[in-house]
Amino acid sequence: MQIHFGEIQKIVDLIEENFDREITAYEIESMSHYSYRNFQRIFFRIFNETISGFQKRLRLENAYKKLIYTTDTISDIAWQIGYFNIQSFSKAFKQQYHISPAVARKSKQEIFSQFIDNTQGNLPHEIKYKDPVSIYCRFIKAEDYNNQEINDLWESIENENEISGSAYGIIRDQPLITSVPHCRYGAGIKHVSSGISGFQKKEIFGGKYIKFTHYGSFDSILETYRIFYRFWLTESLFMLDNSDVIEEYTQSPTGEIITHIYFPLYS
Image 1 (tube, helix red, strand yellow):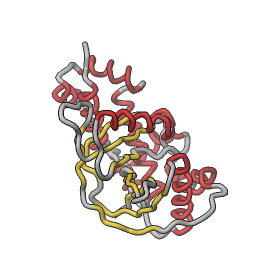
Image 2: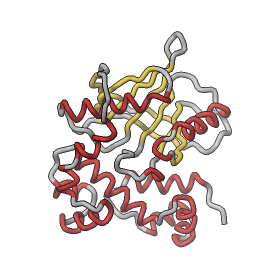
Image 3: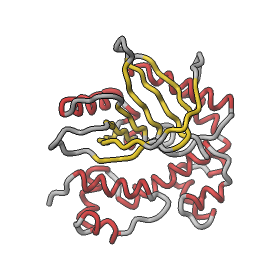
Image 4: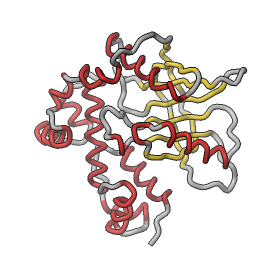
C-alpha cells in the first residue's frame, strides 16, 4: 500500500487548522480514502508519533504559546484549545511539560533568557497589516530550523521552478517550546511550473504583524530573532499571536539578500 505525501499533508493541514478539536477517524478515512488503521501506520512511520499524539501535542504547544504570548486567562486558553475544564487541561499540560500552566506563564523570562543572553543591538521595526497572499508550499521537518536542511529544500525547489519576485518561509513552530525533531518549515513561492507536484496551495498573512528586517546571509539570521525577542520581552508593548511567523525573501538592486520577518500580533 502506498499513500502519496500529498494525502498525508492534507490530513496534517486539517489537524493544524483544527487543533482545538479532535479530528475523527471518519474524517481521516473520508479525506485519505484509506482505512484509519492503515493511515495511522503510515503516519507513524513518517512522523514517529500517532495521529492522536500529534493532535494532542499541537494543542498543548499552542496553549504554551498563548500562555507566554498573551494575557488571556488560563481557563480561557483551555477553552480556546478544546479543553472543557481547566483541570483536564492542567493535567495534560503537566504531563507534557512537567510544569503547570501557571508556572509556565510565570517562567516566560526564564524560557527566553538563554536564547537572548548577551544579545546586543537594536533594529528598526514597524507595525503592518498584511493582506492575504496565496502561495505554493513544501514543508519539511527542520531540526531546530537547521539552515542546511532549509537550503537543501530551496535548492530542490529552485531546480524545478523559475522563482520570480518574493519567496516565503513559514516558521510553524516555536523551537523553545516544540521539541527539536518536530520543528516544521515551509518554503513558499507564488507560481509553480506546469507538471510539478509536491506543492500545496496555501494562504499566508491576513492580519497585523510587527516586521523586523535581516540583511545578508541566513547564517546570522538567528541574531535578528534574538534581537526581536529581547525587544519583545523588555518593551512589553504588544502581545504575539500563536500563528506562523513569516519570512519574506527578496533581493536589493545590488543582489544583497533581504529577509523581512513578520511576527503575528494578537488581536
